[in-house]
Length: 397
Ligand code: PMP
Ligand code: GLU
Image (cartoon, rainbow, N blue to C red):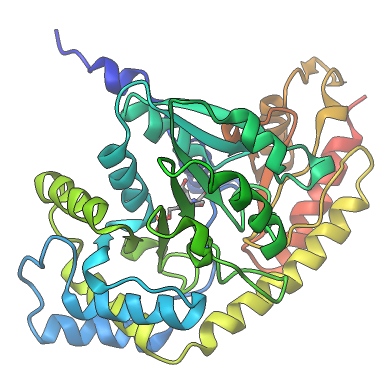
């Protein structure tokens, strides 16, 4: 009899991808579903990036690339990090992977031993806990409530650290809350972290460019943490390139080398064509990034306004990314006919079945009682989705 390993059996499937798949199936079956589940920009990849990919095909970039990526791309990434964040990483410290997802997993598998603790402020993106599980590490959740704008305090961070803490995993702007730590807030966390030189800070900055605060501070800019920060980023969100699968880590050299060794054994270098497209993204005109950011900010204003008008829902005002994470706990215990709502997962399924709007249960992000909406879609669909959600929730008594 075929058996699946315990390692994989113990993993949860990605809830974001599962919900998106479910909504695509319903749509294929003729149901008019609005998909606010998966987090990906609805824009097409900018033309100059697509042209670079076509040229790469014609120029025969069809051979294996170096495992950590083409040197020209790693140089472009290093220059981009310097220009946007003011941080110094050499091209040798950059490892290009099949999306930021693989970059994160590479770093976790390269640094976490069984039993090592990884501190994760929650709510947090679905894959972090599962990646730590893959490495046989132990997740230590640090819960941040909506009252604290889903951001942890220095006190909470200090309390979570033990002699076994190996890594702290940050994500700002955050998926699923859209919260952004200010420079002052990060500085306060750094004051705690600087007392623990053995802790690696893994900073997921994939939403760095989708930020409505007017300023951004990378974790790698703090001199107190020099040599202890790994930056994760990629082209998926900033350049509307989710399907191209290019992300990277910028890491202390020994970690970059370890990631290269790991990647060399299980995927090799990322797609050659996609790497050339990413190189164009980083070296070409950057107006597209700002144009998309502005569209997301306008949609943020719209979705927050519409959500606030729905009785029973409580929201923060996200300052980045393209997610809203409403508290829907007031609907738990209510019913519509025979259908009883006993969790936020039930709220998400109820909205899918009756309003035909796909969202994701907050439990997948370590905070039950909430749901996540991705507003990376048109104004019309945002209006229609929020109207449907409001109507469906009003039927719960
Ligand atoms: N980090 C966060 C917080 C995300 O939301 C995602 C989802 N796209 C990723 C990393 C991975 O992005 P990708 O693999 O598409 O580069
Ligand atoms: N990161 C996006 C999300 O949270 C894409 C799906 C995924 O990779 O989980 O929806």
